[in-house]
Image (cartoon, rainbow, N blue to C red; front, side, top):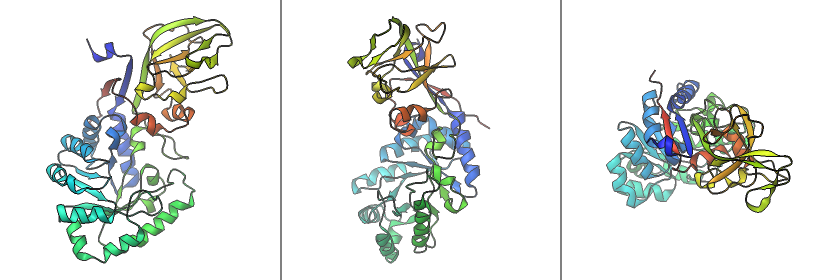
Length: 367
């Protein structure tokens, strides 16, 4: 029996849409190289499937967060350049050598460890320009530029920074970061440079530099206030386990926080927060919660989301029956709208999906 037949939850992943999204960003940012960020298991859709599809589309450079992800990406793309964003510890040296991984060096300690353990192997130097997360301070970067022996041992092949507010095109920090990055780049005149993420690509050519690093946009999530998402890549559907007739005035779910105002037909879905579908998508008498879709119609979530079960109101959907599949997010129910109802972002829904869902991959378009 197929996995689909046994599943209560189905995640369909369109690798063709993934490839087309990447190509669109590549064309938009040309002549800069377009990499792909595939950390967090390729934003939840699977490194082993996403990386080959992107490589077949022409992507040659990938960014992951951790060495374990780099190993998986290397198995999927033997000839690619693979960078590890979360830096380098000395005990990682053998793993980096074995799988041809390249670190993004975020601190003086990272740089010293890399220069000592893996001298003259390629790396990226990360400079913080306003995010205050990872990266060398501007002072540390200038100091590094004055140490040619250490630079030669660390063997940087690129300088990078990361935009904090690129999803808000008018935010003044975008230009401030670009200006600071240009200044520090002057200390490393021979190094190519990378600044733009998904939203940064859409800030214009000034931000493209030599390489762009899109992530969420490739996967069909919202990435900027003034830009619609690209093609939908992931669609999550849950099976109806039971349909109940509920009288007016009765309550739904734990805590009895949601009353129905009239006689209703309630479908119980095989999904819940154990699947990464957030508990905060649920509703109560004061908060409407998220919606799903069935047969082209929106159906509201009623009551709290349980570990394995969700209730939706299908009163307005004629013929709804046990075994039907309800779209929790996808082409008819944007993931970012669902995430907004839970007070979060689409990134968190994608990367938090459990492996309990049966996965169906739609092959990438080879053209």
